[in-house]
Length: 339
Image 1 (cartoon, rainbow, N blue to C red):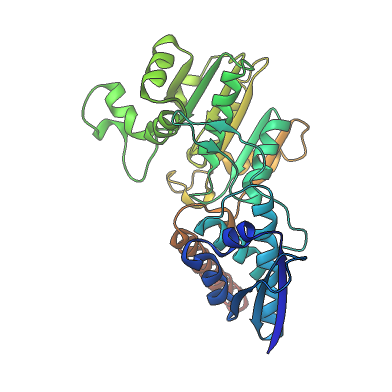
Image 2: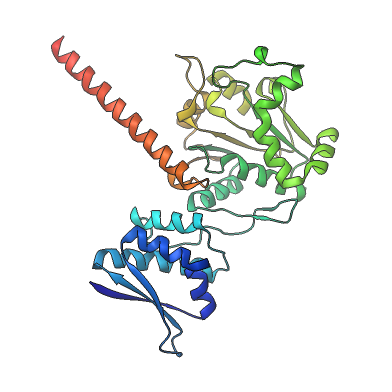
């Protein structure tokens, strides 16, 4: 059993690290099997947070506390989500060079809430969007691919960097087709575009959104509506791009006009295309790699910012798919040897 010390500058910093009802340190104690207490016996050096436990575990807990201390020093409010994220970084050994992943405010929502990155992956994704004309954002559900792209688009519109926002998705979903849905064409299309509406409502408010929509400043349409167009002075987002065919992806990417930016998002593990049809997103990620002005960024389950169980669900499914792939490979090897 060893004792490790983490110094803080003030009672306020210590309180922020401990969290409401000591919730933050309780999470760290549980994660690394340590005991954490507060000791203020030297006013000259500030507060001391003391970690007790086995050496390896105590060192990990200290690294997590130091990372969180950096965030508090940058004025960030610690949440259960951010504490869990830091714990995950330490467990995976990815905290050697701690950096604040929040960064600058991307956008202010209609209710005054600042939108910031919540993981290092999100911060890098935002940087990629700023530095490239076309960005492909790949990764599992819940990583903020679409939400952050919409936030960047709204901010570009507010700054008059673009004149309009265009959001599109392929109208392909799990087993359903437009013809089976009730209503006119707009009624059939709306369910596919609902996640885009939700993000814009949060950024702009329903009234502003409706006004922009009526004036053509915001356009939301199925991917098929993009054919034959040239999109100048626009911020264009193609969502759920794993459900595009290679031909559709090529069509979309060649719509790009002057002073425009395109963000393509998708999760290659959730493709709903018919069996035997390749994903346009997968092919684009391979053939566009290395082209100047095109950024390809891949999130991991570590960047999931929904409920902590979502990350565990994604990890479980990835493990299941790996196990299936290994079994198939073993079966093929045995079959080849028999043949």
